[in-house]
Each structure stands twice: as C-alpha cells, then as structure tokens.
Image 1: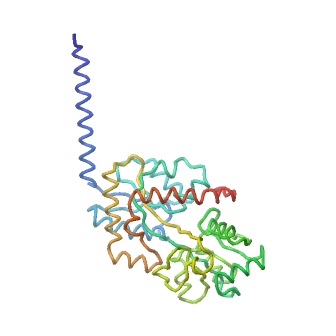
Image 2: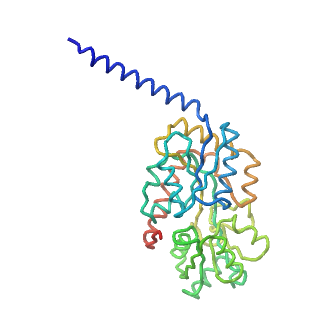
Image 3: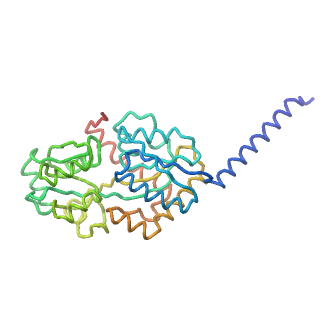
Length: 330
C-alpha cells in the first residue's frame, strides 16, 4: 500500500522546487529590476574609479537601471574584491578589477577567496598598457641604448614602483630577467608620487600606464622608450612598441575586467556582458578612453569566455615571477 502522507509530502516538495525554479528563471529574465552596485576596490578619483564610472554610465543606458559605484579601498584591493566574493550571486553586486586585484594579489596575499574559482567572468574592459619611461636627463635616447646603459652601470639605476607587487614592480622584475640588467627598486605609495620624482630627476626609470604618462609626454618633461604591447597605441602613436624598440616579447598590461560572484546565472552574466559590449561600441566612449590613454579590448575579446582564458593565462605567466621574487603583502 502507498504511504499517502509520504507521497503527498514528496509531491508538495516537487511542486515547491518547480515553483522556486520558475521564480529563478523569471528573475533572470526580468533582470535587472533595481540598481546594480559595482564595487571598485580603490578610493574615488583614481584611474580605476574613472574607468568604472565611464563603464557604469554606458551600462545604465543598456540595462535600464543605475549602476552605482561603491568605492571600497584598502589592502591593495582585497577588501573590496572579498566583499563581492561573499555577495549574493544575483547580479546586483559586481567586481570591477584589474591585473593587480584578480591576478597578482592571488600570489602575494593569503586571501579568503580564490581569484579564479569564486567569480563568474563577465568581460574584459580596458587594455591599460604600460610605458617604459625615464627622467629627461637620462643619457639613453632609445630602448637599446637604455639597456646598454643599465648593463654598463649595474645596480646604480633606480626604478620606481607603486609598492611591492604593483605593476611597475613586477614588470620591472620581468624587464631585469629579459635584459640581464640590474637596478634598485624604489617603492612609493602610488604612481603619482613616483611620477613626480621621475619628473624631478630623483629616480631614473618607471613603468607607468599610458594614462599617467600622457601629460608629461606632452610637456616634454620625461623620455618614453616603448609601450609594452604588440601594437602602437592610438593615444600615443609615435611611441614604438617593445618589439620595434628592441625588446621583443616584453608585454605587460594592467588590464581591467568585470566579474560577478560565483553562481550568478548565465542569463544574468550574458545580459551584463551585452551591456559592456554596447558601451564600448559607442564611439564617444572609445574617444573618452583614448583621451586618457586607454583602449577597450576588441569585440571578440569582450566575452566572458575570453576573460576566463585571459585571466588564467596571466596567472600562469605572472605568479611564478612574483613567487620567485618572494613578494609578500604587508
């Protein structure tokens, strides 16, 4: 004989599961129905904040809901990124991040989250290429000459960084390895004070993003030797690539991307990705980015899948360099 109470309970449970699944599907289809929060793990007013705000404006037009920037600074971005890792995976809390927060930090800090496993990739955003620059009085007039000068003066030159494990520091380690040169790293609390000292001639070299370099290049107060990319940049078309300048294969970008907490539905991720694509398809947005020395990734590189592959490849490239140098977060 059938145990009717057990059968009834099973039937009710099955109906409840179907009902909840229907709600989940409907919520994904209706998404978004309220404002979205984009956590930027750095203080307001910096380059990260600028990129995120340009993006949020475009995404708002596409999604029909405000995308609110929440600046959660501290601990090299780990506090803000950790908050998103712990957030409900409903598409209403997103993580703006860059090479440092979603690649380097995984090798530098003992994190409470996994930079790969605890997030759903949404899309690549901007390609923030670095520039090899020097104080104006440096005797070398091109990259080959710079490398020769460094080899002739081992350990004497100074290379500014924005702190241990920052792009200029890790990029400098790769530069040392590829050129067989030696110089001293000088840590700063950020790129701005490092750039000030370079302009003043207090340090010899720096590897900043193009956005930090442009005003000084236009003023003629520093020397630029090469951009760390395979192609020249629209924002500075006269600067040679590292391939052209004599250091082939030296590529580095403090690129940025957008992630959601792990478990966010594919439908929601796809809607967010479409909003990114629509934003960067706007010529006025690309013009704004070019004006500050940035470029959006190509359309085919803006997919969630492309971000996943790219981030993994960057981890495989940079983690061994960071760990070999013994860099640890303070």
